[in-house]
Length: 278
Image 1 (cartoon, rainbow, N blue to C red):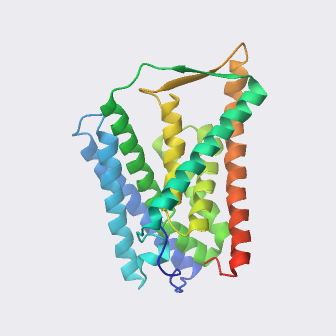
Image 2 (cartoon, rainbow, N blue to C red):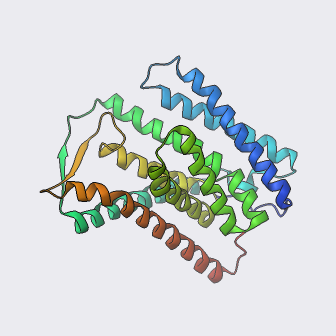
């Protein structure tokens, strides 16, 4: 969400920045663990929505508390809400959908034509719950990584190192979630680079949340998340093993190139406006 004023000029030393961000991430894990226990008291289909929503609120409170201790405001980490946040979120949805479509296009060019078959239609409540849960979980992770941590580290280490440190932490947390190393290296890490690049380019979390939601929803719609889906996607002919092997690598390349493209656009825009990026 676009700050109404430029980020606060206060700069922490590198040691203090790392200490504060690590403390924040410890709080992140504690909040997720605590609400994860409470999630078990709810019906399974509502658990992710409640967990993501409650954790997002808890992380927002933790962020505000830390910023007050440091004498900073939410403007410093891209969290204020404005009318323009809706447009940036929508732009993020478009970008995320386009990135996913490009991945499918490249797979079809390299491995063979893709075939989509309509799955049995999920109930309307299942669709609404999935969309709401995806939004809640994406917001939770964007507050946890592309708000206080990204801007705090970027101010002390610079944009590039700040991006890499946050992306590495984002990947590590998914390892703790139990994700496979290949999924983390080829999917989570480059996705984090894209989310971070969009956050820096727009100076807020509305747009990266939109990208995050779009990518996750596209995967859910195509049955990649397990559970009910709207379509099932496959490759015509005998090239399905080839597509399965290539898909993670193609996704990694497209996500990484998208992150680089957003970063270059941000740099070009910064030169045109002659405004300091941070």
